[in-house]
Length: 169
Length: 208
Image (cartoon, rainbow over all chains, first blue to last red; front, side):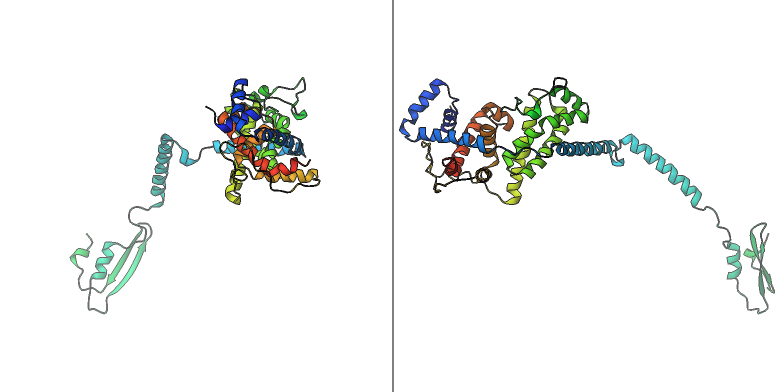
């Protein structure tokens, strides 16, 4: 069932069937202004068609040029966006890159981090001698470096005795 | 003027020119030149249609461009169930209506669809006579200004049905397709839009 508004619009535009129009016009008999209003509505439509026309498009070629430029720019962006960022990689890709990073880190660790006794560092032997004490003011200590063996020997003169733990075998 | 009919000189094909569907197929394959031909073919009608809704030349220019860009982006979804222009028409109309809605939100414009309808009883079909005094003579520019001012006072939905029906001359079914609503909704909106425009413009068209 059409509403009153729908039937009224159809009546103005002549879109009701003959039976619908007759029935609706009987309904409108109690509304004396219906016919003048229909005439008024048709006048409005005619008025709009004659006076509400749009101005013509000026610089039409420039319009097309701008649309084409925007489409080209948009297409360029789409091509760029097709390249996947690292956070869009798949799990196998991430696993491979992770493994490569681990290998690289291991290699760098091997190369950069020194192992064993650092060159020129003191020896436990030296520390033991220094810890030994004597009241003799005539004791002297002379360091002798042997570059061939990379050894520094502390030559002591004037000691009454050498601690057993510091004796050379 | 039905969206499926071509009446503008801008849209007439020369005999050796490809038809719309050929150009659409090439556009769907990524041929921007083919789409540019469609733009050239329909740019004037697109501009006019949008202008009739937004009533501003600069806005109509920008929105017509936005509409074509949207059409390009979604050209792959065109299945040929309607003519290309009907499909484009729907996109353009949505762009125009969205623009009016945005202006309503950001600009604070309010569409009072009850203006001029307060005295309409359910069974009454006529409006109170316009309260404005008759005018002596009105220039074309003034007429256009009055029409613009009146249309701007309609809600986007009412403006769209009036433009599509009274200016573009579409049938109810075509309007329903473009606006994605029922024919009953189209007819109901037309009823209220006409009543409001009769109130706002009667003094103009009665004195021409």
